[in-house]
Structure formats: C-alpha cells, structure tokens
Image (cartoon, rainbow, N blue to C red; front, side, top):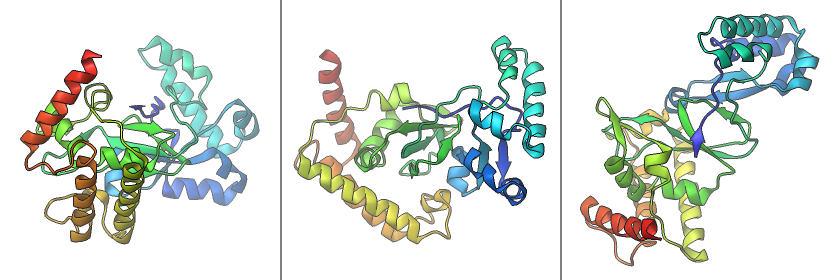
Length: 266
C-alpha cells in the first residue's frame, strides 16, 4: 500500500468532465493520454475527474496540441515558481506527475480520512485505467480477497484503534494500520468464500448507483442490502481467526493483538 500519485502541477494536469470532453471533441486521438483521476473526495462523492497521463513518447506526439501545450506550459511555470528545488527541476518534464505511482492494474483505494460515524471505511476496487491521487492510499495488482479483508469489521476495528485522528475523523495510514494488520493463513475454501462475498459487496453498491459511496456508508442512509452483505462478510472474515463469531470489538482486538504479538516476535 502506497500513497497515490502526486502531480505538483498547480492543477493543470487535471481535467474536469467538460474539459476532457472539449479536448476529445477536437482531438479524439488524445483519448490515449487521458485517464480517470480519483482522489478521496472524488471517490466518496462520485465526482468525475480526469488527468493527462503521458510519457516522453506521448509528449512528442501530443505536446504541440494547443490545449495540451497551454496546460503543460502552465505546469512548467508553476513548478519553476516553487520553493522546492526538486520541484523546480521537474519543470523540464511538465508532462509528468511529480511523484507518479500509477500501475496499469486493478487497484484498491482507501481514503486518507473517514468520518468517525461510519462503521466501515468506504474502500474501493478500481479498474486498471484509474490513476489514484495522493489524497488516498492505493494497492496495485489488487484482488477481491484483499478487498474483502480490508472492508471487514476486523480490519475497521484495528484501524479505529491504531490509527490517528484528524479532528474527530479517522486518519488511515499504511504504516500504522495496513502494514501491521494481523491476518492468519487461510485455506482455499475460505479464500473463495471471501472473494465471493467481496464481489457481492461491490454488486450491491452498483445496484444503488443513485447514491454516492459517502451516502451508502452513512449510518443513517446505508441500504439494508449493503448492511446484510457486510454482516455476512464480517462473519466469514472472523472465521479466519476462530470458528465462533466475536461478540464485541474488545474480543476482536484481544485476538488481533495476540496475533500481532506472535507476528512481531517472529
């Protein structure tokens, strides 16, 4: 798990829906250098944004396209005006994100902050053409098994205990939470069950396409079908730790910290 890609561009590599459409209407071939761009707010509130994602060959092909040329020149000027020497140096590569992390694969996105009112952090499973911004954490080469584990009550209980806060909101981190989360070895049958339930979570979300993820995970508006499939996923994840379900977060934490102690002792 890493931070998403940081542009350090003054906003000029990022496109709204209308800006993307305007470029593509005039230059349809530019579709190959425009990708979906998603930060935490975009993910939670169903905001469509895009970005110019280019390498040197793309720059040689599209760098003189007028609306792209104008944007790249603004990136160059923005970086030259920075107080950071390394950012100034990147002005010679205005077509590149300052810290590119994107991998062309399915990914899991986790917002850096999440409301303390939510029982679960809204976590996403994204297609391979989405660039995640540095306002969120991302796991590339992701799979449904990992998504199912991370979106479970066991992982959320661990997160609420070991992570910090931004005001009252939970502040997720890869080092404190993801890297330390204790998870036992499991058999293929359990893996298949978790993958199936993880897909069900995604399917139920899709059925409520008229709601944002923020609304779906608001405790006052969370659909009953989503609550139900999360409950079944929670029970399946708990069976990875012991046969009987846990009766409280205290029991979950006791089990997790015992496993963590064994893990760190090794």
